[in-house]
Image: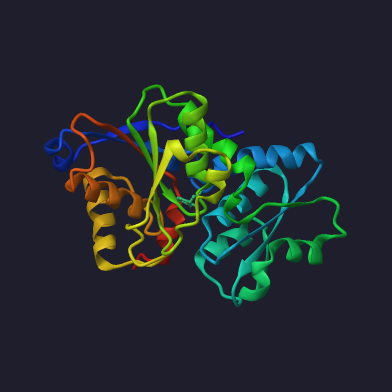
Amino acid sequence: MININSPVEQLHFELFEQKKIQVFLKRDDLIHPFISGNKWRKLKYTLQDAVQKNKTHLVSFGGAYSNHLNALACAAATFGFKATAFVRGEEISNQMLALNKLWGMELIFVDRTAYKNKLELFEKHFSNDEKAYFIDEGGAGPFGAKGCEEIVTELTETYDKIFCAVGTATTLQGIAQAIKNNGLQTKAEGICVLKGAEGIDAHLKENELEDYYKIHHQFHEGGYAKTNPELLDFIKLFASKTGILLDQVYTAKMMKAVFTLAQQDYFEPNSKILCVHTGGLLGLLGVLK
Ligand SMILES: *Cc1c(COP(=O)(O)O)cnc(C)c1O
């Protein structure tokens, strides 16, 4: 399996010094070059479940720039599974999809209406394939959240806040669950990268995690996968000061939000803040020129 205990590094910026806060980054982007970040964490127990159920064909879903599909395609090749992906939208080619094909993943393009009903798509194509195993978009689900609990349980220090980007809020759920299970004083704080996604945390409420997390909805920078010159400048600044790359869809929005919150004196002096670098760097292929 993949060695998962990712390192934590302190980020040194003048702003953090001025505000008397310590900010750290958990480098889940270093877990694996392609099966990186929270996508491996979400797949870990999902793949174990597939093996237990004797399933050898992983079937999942995503957009044409899905980090989850990249991670799944590479993981399937690494661990000897067959993989098929339903890709949302009309057939296109790009570098991320080309990598998926290189890892042997079959791609089935489906229009946006058909894509909405994932279980129906799975049934329609694979009801006769007893080896087929359904994995939800983004690796969402209970096994996904369980894997993300380890972001917290493998820490050797405590923090006042743990920040992560929020897409499906599966990662945030895992972090909040681990905080609850271990009786920590930490708060999980998510930066939502989707616009108008105020109901994204329904599954956290169902799991009675209200007291352990907060989602910020003002940092989506225009909506899912939307970028702007300031965001791209931030990526450049961060890379040039730290050597660490951020992707424009998730981690840059999370990190930029933490800078903005620090500027707004959101953090009490002497706070210790951990940001999770959830990986996804291949997404940069979509914007680099
Ligand atoms: C998928 C992804 C996320 C979103 O995680 P959720 O568990 O769906 O909220 C965050 N960061 C990166 C880099 C991702 O690829």
